[in-house]
Length: 368
Image 1 (cartoon, rainbow, N blue to C red):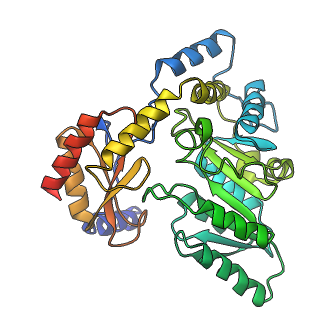
Image 2 (tube, rainbow, N blue to C red; image 1 turned 90 degrees about the vertical axis):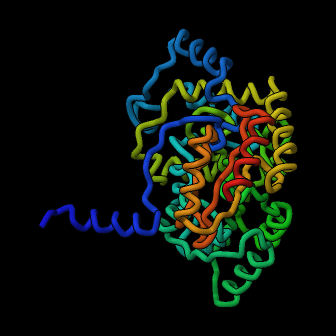
Image 3 (cartoon, helix red, strand yellow; image 1 turned 45 degrees about the vertical axis):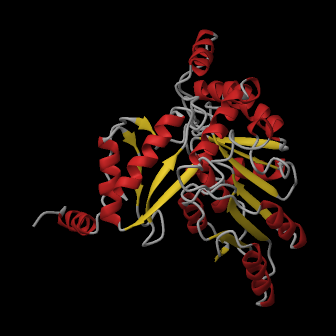
C-alpha cells in the first residue's frame, strides 16, 4: 500500500465526476484571460518596464515590506493609486487572493458580522475562514437580503460592526452589483462596505476607476483593485482609510510575513494607471466589442459572458472542441460555480476581433 493511495483515490473520484483540473497551454484566440485592455503584452508596458530597468529599479524586493523589502517603487505606486482612485491610502499585495484574504482575516473584529454575497470570490471565503467574525451569506445581488441579515443579527444581540462584502462585477456571471443600494444600507447601519473591483477596474468608471468610483474615499468603504487583469501586471491594491491600511500593515499576517512584490512590477503598474488616462481608446475598443458580443451571445452588460451548459463532462467536452477550433475558451465547473451550472466562461478582451467573436458564437451554437 502506498502513502499516496489516498490522494490517488481522491483524484479518481474527481475524474469520475469530470472535475479534475489540469494546466493547459495557451492556444488560439484569447477568450479566457482577464487581460481585458490588452495591456499585458503591449509595447507601452514593455517600454515602461525597460525604462524602469534602465533607471535601476530592482526585479526582486529581497525581503518583506517591514524588513528591507520596502522599495520606493512600492510607496510611489501606493501614493499614486490612492490619488488615482480617490482613497485616503492604499496598500499593494502580491495577488488579489492575498489581499482579499488579508482584508477579511484582519479587519473585522470577533464580535462583528460579515454579510457576504452568495457568489463572492473564494479568496474572501478564505479570509473569513481565517478571521474571527461571524459570517452569513446573502442572496446574490439582493440588497434587502443584506439588510435583513444585519437586522436579524442585531435582533439576536449582535453588538459589533457589520461588514457588507460584495464584488462590483462578478467574475463568473458577468453581472453588476447594486452598489448604490448597498452603500445606502451600509450608511444606515453604520457598516463597512467592502467592494472587490477586480473585474471592473480599468474597464468601467471615469478613466477606468471602476464601478465604485463614486463611493471611493468614504471612511466606511474598502475597495480591492486587482492589477493582474485589465491593468496587465500583477498584484492587488487595497484602497481604504489610512487607519484601515495601517491596521493591515500591523496585523495582516499575509502582508507581514510575505516577501514584498517585485519593485519592477510596481513600476509597471504605475505605468498602467497612466495608460488608463492616456489611452482611453483601449476602453472604447473593449466596450465596442462588448456591444457587438451582445448581438450574438448572451448579454450581461460586461466583458464576462457565461454560457451555461449544466453538465460537467459536456461542458469540458465543448470547451475542448472550441479550443481545437482555435477559440481559447475554458470550462468552469463546481465548486467554482454552483452545482448544475457548469459553463463556458467567455472573456472579452482587446486581444480578439469582432469577427472572432462572431465565429465563436456560431461554433457554440453548433455545439451546445
